[in-house]
Image 1 (cartoon, rainbow, N blue to C red):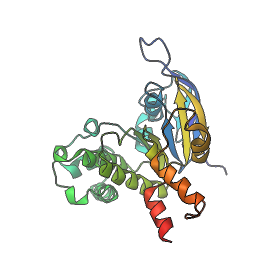
Image 2 (image 1 turned 90 degrees about the vertical axis):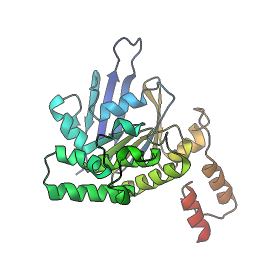
Image 3 (image 1 turned 135 degrees about the vertical axis):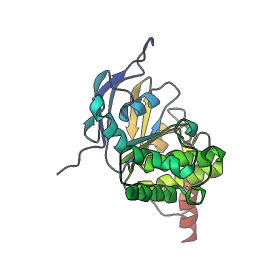
Length: 273
């Protein structure tokens, strides 16, 4: 039997009160389990509105949006949708609710009414996945920006979602913190978690299995990363990341095998084989 999509959106539209144009209009999108979708577009293209719709924070005014087979416009389904679809925002301070790291991670599971043993197990797994185990007793607001972002991710993971939506969640991180955060996402994706990543950083797109570009509230292009780099990156005015340029040079010289991703660690591993 064919598996139902994690997200199914058809003809979806949303307009903010007082706005002269729709934030999104006639959006059609289907995402299957385990995909890593890079959602690109300029500011105002509708990416964040679409993300909030997928998380049931905004109901579609037109068309339909289903997450895990649940209608995001149904208020009675919102809690169930958000247990399965976690949304991590750009500013981690907006999502930190407790003064101690492990207490913040436990906040979501506690609200689900889970037994204490289950909560402790979820918190432990989330802290390990995000590399925060040794900081469990630290004050939440004493953390660095990168650590706070990983804490926001840990809080989302403690809900054991099937999908993660990341709305420019690396924009406040330094290069080291960004690399750590992306490594964590790669590990989660290998475990089967679906990722929707809104980003302006082309070096992050290289991790994706699919690229979706939005313009003026609509899906302007949807395809594979290879097609994006070869055909659409320059056309839509995006910069080519240095990792991709390096990969092309190494391929031309026969130094790396076909299928190598333009990710620094992958390139180094291929060169050492």
